[in-house]
Image (cartoon, rainbow, N blue to C red; front, side):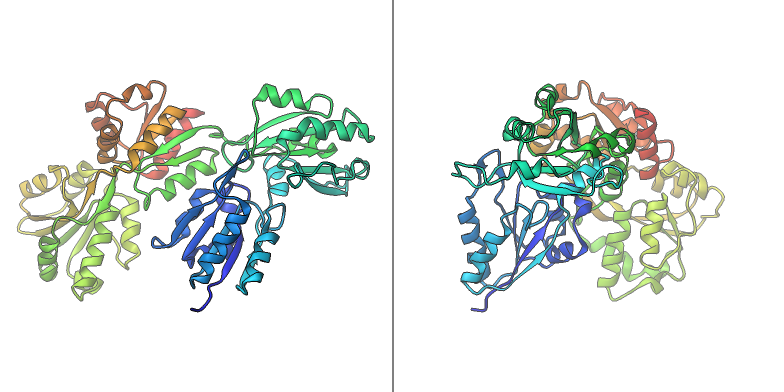
Length: 501
């Protein structure tokens, strides 16, 4: 059998946006992904659904698999002829044991490629507001492992030489922090030298302790910091007071649960994370096809007979398009019909298939669309309304009252994702600041998933995208503290920002 190929990919230091484009491309064609504890799990969204995912993380001395076991696993998967991505936190060649893995591959003649990653040694200080070099402070820099190979009795580190270097960065050194400080002081470094310890750098969980070689151990204890963290020693640490930017963002430190489907969560998550929040993507709905496509397919067979087509969501556009193409038709089939949508996001989804909306109401809900149609003569007009299998009836009812013939066909349905139950309860037990709801179905399913655990919401803020979703929450007994004035993702983000500021 033909041998596969192994890609050693640096995942970066934690922020999923810091992986390279080449690293993402490798993930997109992976058949097996073997990933570490420090590789952000969100990077797995780039991996094909059918790919095998294997976690081999090492945390606090507890190894899911030994390094020798990881080496054997890489060889085994590659010899089966598959494309393997070894996803490693930071960079594969900076204390990442990538060299050992390559040696195992070479022994079996397995082809490989190394895709470097952004190392935490430089990225984490940058996110803490510290340049590792600065012409006014130092032009020398050293990277040092905080713990050497297991079983070593004597340190191979030249502490005297290290003490003369401007900036020192220790990786994986939290357990040895007292010894590191002591060795540097003994070998000539001033006890007043600034030291910064940064935990979970580049992520919304980033925490920082500042001190000197004399007192940093105590400062770290007081702050309750632990691994994963880096230790930076040097005068450049003084620049943090002026240069810090990451922690200064308005939502930094806030943990927010996003209940949208994974496919639709990205814009909300990206917007909140750009403002500093830590987002937990836990969908409370899953979009699936309706029980039968026959009503929609039948309508599409006579699509040219409709005067209007109304889309109330992006999902309706998506399934309508798929069934239209499956019927051997395309956008030209709608040349006679005019199109109405609720909301700018739905209008953009329509534009992606080459269509422009003729009518977008000022108020992004069914009542707004009804008001907009009051200026249109609908007597004798045929309207097609592809939508969710279960939805509010106000729109078709009011349009019929205006004289239209309305054909409502199910284009999709929402179901409860049982797999989210454990993750949701776990997140609430750990503590979150806010839960966001973008539809009534996300709200109803959220409370079905946490049934019996509602006490976990005692100090949690609920945020709604608009009045319909808010009313659903009130009906459930949990009125939201935040409601978007504009019923869009951008409007919801603005409302959240205003609330916390």
